[in-house]
Length: 385
Image (cartoon, rainbow, N blue to C red; front, side):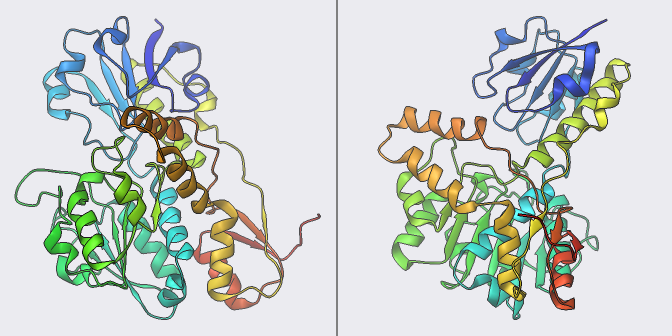
């Protein structure tokens, strides 16, 4: 039996990972409609596709996979009631998001220097991404605290209440989107919460757009001129509010977790679950990777914050993504801007992660420690030109 798979065009490697047991057909995740599911045994999506009974009822779909860590776009209760299998990819993009956050910090003034000298990061959400960020900060010797009322008490290291987190020098949001009491995360960062964030601080949202009340944020920035803001996710996306984009320090098109490494890991995870559900063994290609990223050569004499900044930028140019989004939205009407936002995601370049990269150069002990703290391997050899 060949499993017929309908998949979002932005999920890489499915044909290779599933092999001849599956017939993969591609579609636009944003434009997917019920009629597209005729003849499909499995549906593989990303976060832009709402999956619920209105989409799936009466279709032959028996399995749904989302190549994302979060799954607020999937009605899991309905899937369970319809006896439809489900899988997601928890943690697959965690390192990519961590490196996005660090690169954003390194791109804005002397924020990175201040962190390495004792400033504090407040993390909202102690799940896989928040935990991965906390581990990386600890390795770099950066102080942090975590607010997460969604996890059982005692499971969060460096726990703090929300007001403590909001008073930190950097506030980084990594919670899931939920509207359920007693701890809804929708508009968690509202007008009142924004008032607790200092004008010299930095607010970063890579979770979900509605976690921040975008209207209140725009009004707050207009009235007070701060804090600095980095938004990768937007309330109402792919509709972007141009005045808000004009006010933020950095704005990107929901691509924080869009590393090639993270995408392939997510693909492997959902392909393994799909194969298990339908009872076939995937080919050896299930262990495939995009290959090792090229090594990074460090100029002699770099250390401390300049070294960290250099390594982060060697893998990811966040300023390019900011410029791409601003260029796509500038002067565009609403429908055109929506389409351009999605094209930025669909045609996103192959971005590799820094972690696990080989770093070459003549570095002292403290510099080597920073290389290891970023998850890299150090080699004293120099690269040939």
